[in-house]
Amino acid sequence: MADTFDKEFPLVAAIHGPADVKRLTLPQLNDLAQEIRTLMLRKEAKQGGHFGPNFGMVEAIIALHYVFNSPDDKLIFDVSHQTYPHKILTGRAYAWLDPARYHDVTGYSAPSESEHDHFVIGHTSTSVSLASGMAKARDAMGTNENVVAIIGDGSLSGGEAFEGLDFVGDMDTNFIVVVNDNQMSIAENHGGLYKSLAELRATNGKSPDNYFRALGLDYIYVANGNDIPSLIDAFQRVKDSTHPIAVHINTLKGKGYAPAVEHKEEWHYTAPFDIATGHPLYESTNEDYQDLTAKYLLRRMKEDPTVLTITAGTPAALDFTEERRREAGRQFIDVGIAEEHAVAMASGMARRGAKPVFGVFSTFVQRTYDQLQQDLCINNSPATIITVWGSPYTMNDVTHACLYDIALLGNIPGLVYLAPTSWEEYEAMLTWSIDQTEHPVAVRMPVGNVLHDPAFEPYDYSQLNHYKVVRRGSKVALIGLGNMLGTALATADLLREHGIVATVINPRYITGIDTALLDQLKADHQTVVTLEDGILDGGFGEKIARYYGPTDMRVRCYGLRKEFHDRFDAAALLRENHLTPSQILTDLLG
Image (cartoon, rainbow, N blue to C red; front, side, top):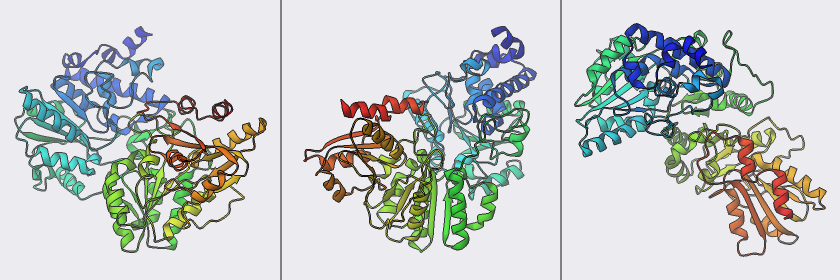
């Protein structure tokens, strides 16, 4: 197998670290770029990954390692969407050369893998701030290595990126920012600063409308950011700089694979696909909660011009495709990668009488905790937050795990956080939330195949914290929050086989407890079990346990241990935390 790799990818196979890159000629560097793209194409076709950003940065990563001396010189990547070529050039090519080792490295910057990675990074707009800290420490320690922050243009809309650039513009020391400008975030870019980038591209970097110079940085423009000689020249000019400088490179997202160039949004991240056609290998024909949400919101927007849907650079969260965004017109608002602004703006909209709906992936809602608490909830603004993919069954990298929203949102005073269990319940909760004017509300979109409840009964959710008894029994009560109601029902079925007819409860509300129902359970129940698919500490179950604390009621809380879970198998993670019906049965009978 190794001989095959050596013959097909002789340049990559011979590279064990950046020193090997420096020995190549310019023609060989171009051949190396082709080999890297071929390897990435094969791997991502098999297992999926961040496609477009990595393909557009191959030449830039090669040039960085040709000029700088990693790991002594520090290369700090933003959001890690450009790290595949970097990993290939820093001793981890085996994870692309050998299909048996495809899963041996993460898709993100990971210091546990290599001394060439300095941070675990998966969220955006962080590289400049992280790198500025390394530069300040370098100066304090009296060393002289280069510090290079690598950031995409889409990440510039994040508030932390501005804060970092504003700070480093005043540092008066070696600091290099490489700005990968491919004119895209995940979808198209939004925000006034992109007019400045467009002016710089149109004038070959000469426009006085220069965002970076305005913040105090020196500036170099590379018109062809996929041309290795031009990149090497630019990086050599800024290496060992004594002041902060931005190197603005104009790249092509998805370069090297026609479907990714033509459809940049769809190819930002891809599931496994057929290389010849670009078509997905696995297409589901099942109903999808995100698709149903988009259809519902489009209908509401057409009926009511004050219904406004917001995204922070991730329109796919609510399945607002390019066609649907056109259909929604000005009622669909993409603020760029700026979750803090999205929540504060939603509060402003709600206070003025509009009906804002902000759709955000669970892993990204934590980026705006202060605005949720301060701007939204203290002001009691009746906006709607839809939390998407809150579950172990969605993203599983440590930086993207969607396991924290229950504890995060469930403990903000004034917020009503709802956990629906079917499409009918979810739609009813959305309708109530959008139309009511009393509370800020978050709704945790269910995950998995769409469940329908033909027996669903409408409920007035303004009557807060009233739980629904799905089955009435005695001795044991199982409270299954949102996605975990199915586990509660399955556990009840197993208990029945042992002569125990359990009560099953759909709590509906994450943020409050039904004290009347909990008091009723004291009469004929000895055990209450809570089930949630988030971190147990600070979660839903603790509210129940705390209420029953002074009583004789036995409470068992099931959820996930408070850990950073990384690249986990969801089913295995649930088993490790005793979150399967058979395990819960064993615990209860034991």
